[in-house]
Length: 150
Length: 488
Image 1: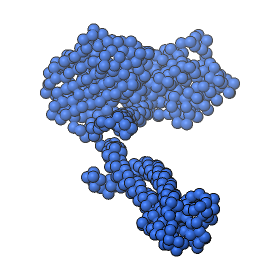
Image 2: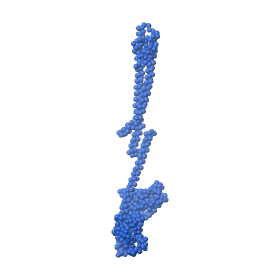
Image 3: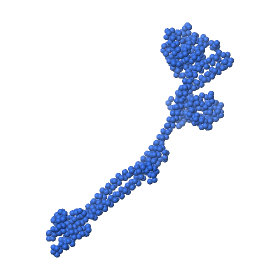
Image 4: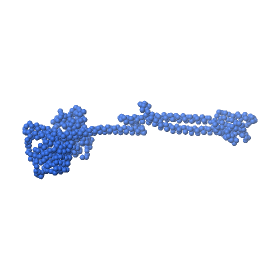
């Protein structure tokens, strides 16, 4: 059983976060952290899976089934995370995305922000940093999203 | 001449440049000879003519004289006696022959027409006849032509005179020719041949880059001018050669720096790639360890071990960050700054570390209160720091590190920083790798080996050079040179 010093079980307000990370261990870690933060978590392991997931959610005509936030690694095999982001935003501008990159490439930071990412995190990420960034990214959700019944 | 005998080639040179003076001499001699010959012949001819005229006149006068005498001699022995007497007039004095000619007579009939006409005309005439002059003078008695006196004078003397004179003339011309030829050869060798040979030798030495003191030619003639030109050419070539040598040395050094930079770039890229990959497992290790620590009882072994794990993971993260920082060095942010103060400040921050290591740290700065340069002060501070640290670390048993900063060649010259230590020095075979990233002679854990390669990178970005001088057992000196820039 997990004992949190800070009870963040309800902070997530039931919002859905999609984690896109090709490394199994790291993906598991992120998912655990986010769950402990009170979020609902889904995860995909590659750019293709991410695209499929989003296609499912967006093109299905039911945008409310899409994630409130995507936390995506920039470099995944076969699929450049930034390309995905660009593609996603062209389809659904309201998509919110948090980009994770290895050791803070400044050019990646700038590019990601330019493409409308809600934030960029450098690996290795600590739990607190991830939760804070997710909370900040979702801040603009406002009451409308929080009111979405799940 | 002794110089001619140095070698076969020199000898052939000697002949070939004597040819030059011989050509000139031959032309001159031809002119002189022809002039002399022509003049000689004209003179001889004139004198011969005069002489012959003389002989002709002589013959005529003698003939007339004897005829006149003959006209006065009374002939009293009758016709036969007369003839006898008159035949006594026949003489042959070698060059002059006198004869009595009866008119009419056989001898008269043999005379040339011109003379017979003269006789008929009652006057003495002289003509040229083969090898002499023949004069005939009429002898008249009682108004009637009874005979003639013939005088023949040879021109043999004149002829032999002419022949002799011509021969002498020819001989003189020949002598003049020979002597002037000899003089031309001698002078040619002395004035042309030898100086030119000396020039050829000098030119050979120049082309063989053989240093030799410049020669001085005393005369002011064309050869001296040529010699002067050759000297100038020689010194010009020497200067040019020196420049070429300097330039290639500079180019070699630039290539070395470039190759080094290439290596750094490659390593940097490798480092960056590696760093990116490391981020993920580090994340997992650090994250899981923290979770374990959180889940375990705070005072237990498990919590402590878990903390160790993520602390070490953080340490790895810092190492990787440093490595990335090196590979991702940003271009210099140049501003106007006082480099004297920057060096002083950088050294001051290291004094404590130096004293801890029992190292005497001396700094020598220029007298001027401040020195302005347009550089990136943070990066240069890093350079000073890394070099001084390197020096301190080279003195495990204490010693001395000197920091010297100056501006070469006055205000507009290079910035020059020297950091010397009295350490054990660097073995020569290690010197080429000194600025390579991760190269270090320290124990593992005591340094990343990135310090000097960072120095090299920063200095290069500023357009400068860094070099090292090391003598084993005496110490090491690093020298950084940065050119001045006046535009920001």
